[in-house]
Figure 1 (cartoon, helix red, strand yellow):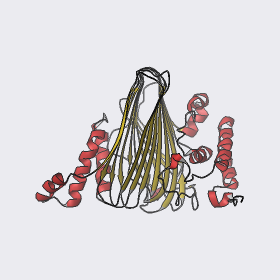
Figure 2: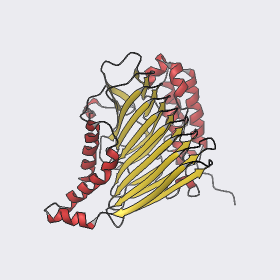
Figure 3: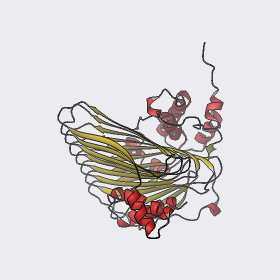
Figure 4: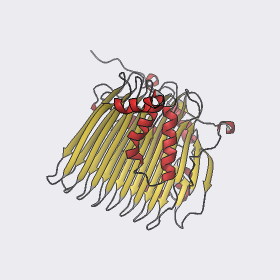
Length: 437
């Protein structure tokens, strides 16, 4: 029996050809190559199927609510909705996007040659440089359809380019806000650090309504040239009804170091894919994540550590705290290619269960094609230490506050890897706020 055809409209909701044509019409003056890339991505989005239960890359994921129906790109933003953005630390530059539009930018004196520009402006002023890096690396971990939708409909974002030998003393901060029921946003951040350069970027994603159904499909690409260092810290606080996808592609060349830390707090169903490529000898990647899952939230984390050169190293540490009926999925793979001898790779997923009804799924894995390597992986799930909890409560500390303190201690191992104390404090404040809900 032949399968019953599914209409494009039922699968894609309001994301139709008319909407895409309108989007292209708003990009007058954009480089032809970018518009062509968008058209190609749109066709890919239409052609790729929605995830299915038979797809190993979606194992354990809840697919029943994975629908685009009811969403459409946000096209306007009321100034009254915007009340500023900040996390309490000094920045070299601060950009705020709301509903896909740049609403605020502040830039202090930057070293000569440093580019920190909205993506649309960078495409006009530095088109060849942007083209060299934009969309050149994909995660390829299951969300290709939603990545294609992002590429087709992204309007703006942030482009950071730090030339060789330049170190930024202060971080760059970028905020992405979404407001309105059914609003969809497509944030994009591209960071390039040339030889022996150094940059820190803090990225925050947030809904302005606590419970509005919203959609986000974001991309951040990090490229570190020989000897360069990039510190990337992200925090998301989507609404409780947001469907969110985030793709993080990391490329480190010879002796480069990239730290990527993601704090996951919001969303009804949030999927984060991160692929780290170690392409030169001495390259190192630190992949970190902290998640607080409450209520009926589901956080889906898919990672890939690909070692392509000898004497490379990577360390992955993902920690989840689960409450109520929340679910997490972690699926991580370390690949060591044949030429990547002397690889040192580590992968760990640790889950702290604060409820008997919560569910944590872990699928760590190795694929080793070289014979002189050191690779380890593991996953653990455990309850809060009853003795510690009793000790705190016996001293008059309420159960909820005791849990907050224990979760804070559980997360501290990851937070300590962030160089800036002010950024660590900002993250601690976000974690405490989520635990107090």
